[in-house]
Image (cartoon, rainbow, N blue to C red; front, side):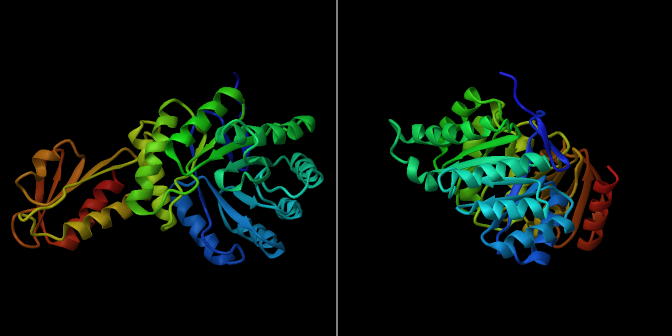
Length: 345
């Protein structure tokens, strides 16, 4: 089946690449805060940002955010399609609607017509928490999703609207896989993949990785979000990690960090986090190691392009490159030199 590809603002979906998304974590009327966050996440590698539109003030605010950011902006609409119309007039790049709570078919048709006029994509986004009138209508829970999806798609087809992204989210990893696998086999539209809720920190990242790895490894998915109850930067780090480990992204750095032990006489945890934050904004295949001591330091990290390790003396740091020592330095000088190596790689 030939899959559709089209533009969403300055990005292209469905061309074989994987776009990274996140979502605003506060009221959309907080324009300056959200614009700053969006631009920072974009520098880290995020491709699109979604914002909730709960009322008219949010609809106007999302337009102001769009003026201040460098990437496409998505309006997340529930219940009231008049807010979708306002968001489209405000200049958003994509509209997300949920078939389970669209307030009227007439309103949806007006939204599709205006989106088509403005050449704005739409996402039909289902999730287990808001199937509403479709719940229990099919032979099983998964069938409910596809009843809702097909009923909605019929309206889009009648209006000859093809710039559609689909998502069928759940908080269950197995159900998520089954939903997206079936959608991939049935429809030509790009897929936005992810769990609805996964948790926070390691728990959320691990759960999301288990769900997304299976899909992405089979070539299923065009945009991803790892939805964490956490700092949005953690979402972008998690997305980049899975794309790198699957070999989908070749332009991302790798950080190797030893777990530390009693031999460690440097502040390895602090330094590793400093290095990780610096690598958030690096887009080149450089491998960097932060190791605790000289026992395993250079040896275990000999395939790293650059590294920093404890020297065996308190607060004295060893720099190395490709397994060869470059010298001993105090903390600030060692970190400065390491960052310079990365920048010039």
